[in-house]
Length: 143
Image 1 (tube, helix red, strand yellow):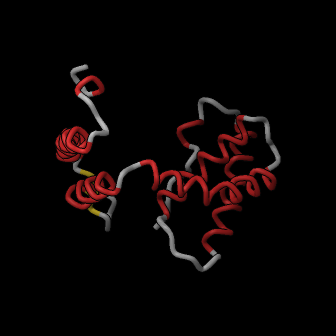
Image 2 (cartoon, rainbow, N blue to C red; image 1 turned 90 degrees about the vertical axis):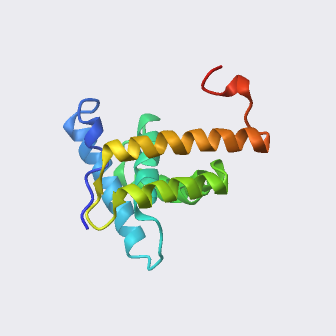
Image 3 (cartoon, rainbow, N blue to C red; image 1 turned 135 degrees about the vertical axis):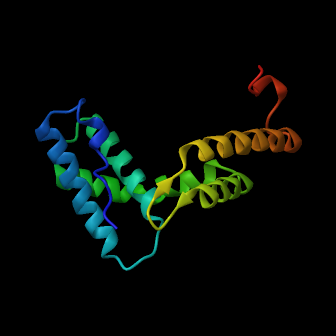
């Protein structure tokens, strides 16, 4: 299944030459990953890879080969951080919401149902956070 260009949202922020550099670095890095023979969450990996390339480019790196190398070397840690930031039960909630409202075969999203489910899931997560002692009324939506 083809993916959209991860830098489409930045067309107004960068000139075409810079976007071409970012895209080249991304495509080379993605090629390395897809030929590695490993299995991984493609969407999360694509997003993390694009974010890393953007980060290194914003620090002034403009060489596409160097951007690729930097992003690939930082990718394992970035992916670990994504998984570690959320408690397992919250990942389960997110997975169940997505399974219920996203047609994974065609990537169709019922936006209204997803919004409703996310509001409920976030509310449930907040309540669970209160129960687990990781949230307080002072940090909640009514604070």
